Image 1 (spheres, rainbow, N blue to C red):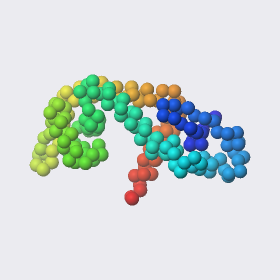
Image 2: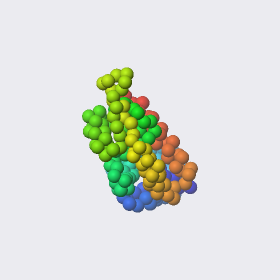
Image 3: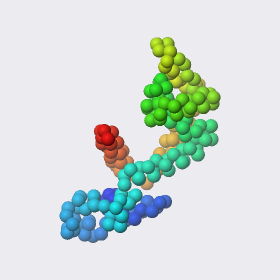
Amino acid sequence: MVSTSATAIGHMRRGSAKLTRPAAADRSGSHRGGSRRARQREPSRNSEFPPDESSGYLVRDAHRAFQRLLERRIAAHGVTRGQWYFLRVLWNEDGLTQRELSARVGMMEPTTVIALRGMEKSGLIRRLRSTDDRRRSHVWLTAKAQRMRKPLLALARGITEEAEADISRGDLLRFRRAIAQMTANLDRIQR
């Protein structure tokens, strides 16, 4: 079985997900450089930290590819990428305060206010002052935005299925566990 570790990736080129087999000495584990696991973590000799050995770089590259395709496809529905993030959160929990919504989407509050203003003009949301605290506004989806939920989520699922083509179910499960663990590891770090 060929490993998809950094050692096995070899020379990955943009647009080509071709994996190369490790050298026979690497597969046998009888290399002078120590254990097989230790060798897999060694950086490439050609560069201090090439992009194809950086999990962060690879995740960012994949994310950008997802975003480019999603942006093109949701535009046909009159939705921008910025609006997509808010819709995605509100479809799961409508009526959040602007502050809660901002935190869930990961945007600064002033940016959220600007984005919500545009969504209100597009007829996707309405903002209502809280009855408990007049300083807080709750964000509610309109019927128009609710109707978009099913077709836009189907579109997003389709993009995910296209991205996952030719990848085994087991590899996808391992990937999801690994990426969730990386996120948890990074979230635990304070600085």
